[in-house]
Image (cartoon, rainbow, N blue to C red; front, side, top):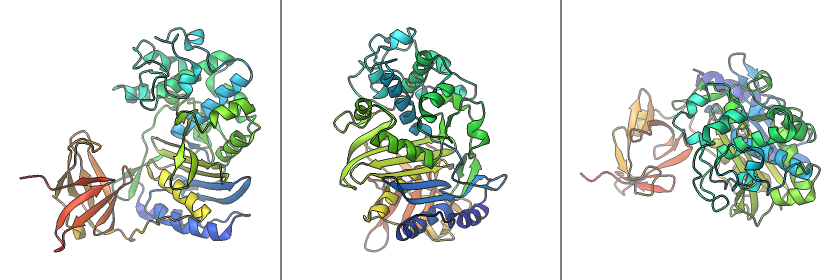
Length: 455
């Protein structure tokens, strides 16, 4: 276990590292905003903000490896989970530019073993509208991650499954299997392993000198951060070890904030894809999900936004690009948490001079006893994350947790004040609603209202 005291001291020390040629007022504001996340073991990693080609902000926080007390630096590699999909997509589009594939190429032309492959196109895979069953949803998926895999072995797991819907007809969920299949198609098209093909197709041409595909051969581990997972309200544990080869194409890349920002710049401003291919990837009129991005209008920023987030054991990532402002924000962390999205969007707001809400933790954190919530239960409606679930506040030692129904387990609660907490596991706000006399009437979890169960 990594104690909150040791990491807090290290994180605060490293967070004041200054890098040249940055906007000083913006840097001070972002530093102040990020500190509570670092101080409570909820963020450790890299944050980079660019407007055009100018770096507005760049900082490195925390430790890459707590055993060796090695600090994160600008060349520390982070596994980026689902952000890998945009890199795989770009490599496929480079094959399209080289006339080795087309978006209308059928899967069966390259991988005839896939059931229904004669109906699935490369475009369907890139837009996650293929209808393939999802390997990540399998009950034995954790076992798959405990063994070395190849794109071929991963595709073989789902190759005989019946398609869930007609290819191209809808987007149902993140199709991890589609990107396992794209990794195999890249191999078939180049005659190289997926890792070597990505170097030749993307990383070298894009100047991404600190990026790689983790096929269990080493570069992402020997030159990268070690992953951690939250333990209780404020501590960390080393993350479960997995074979990253089991996430080929959909989550097996490691990179740095600088390399990712360089990739985004070339994608949106040329130099990586042909004008025709770049226009397809950055299309603002196409499907919301496509080519490794979520592409949709954003009311907070008042413009179209391109975003992608990722989480995998020990790591979390978030990328946002705002084309009107030509603003790129990259947040990479070696702590498994949903907080990177909040950080990325708030940092973008700070850089643009827009409103944002700082996180106001009380340090040291309030003890569970002082909140007087233990034992209270609240039932949520049918449209809640777990329909009609009753959640209970549970005290464990000096910490407070939310107990979900059997399949959910207990999630730790970070107290902000007497009536406001954050579920650390999902980074969702939990607010106490009181009557005029101070007694508790209900609670809210995210946008949902929970009331005491009817007796």
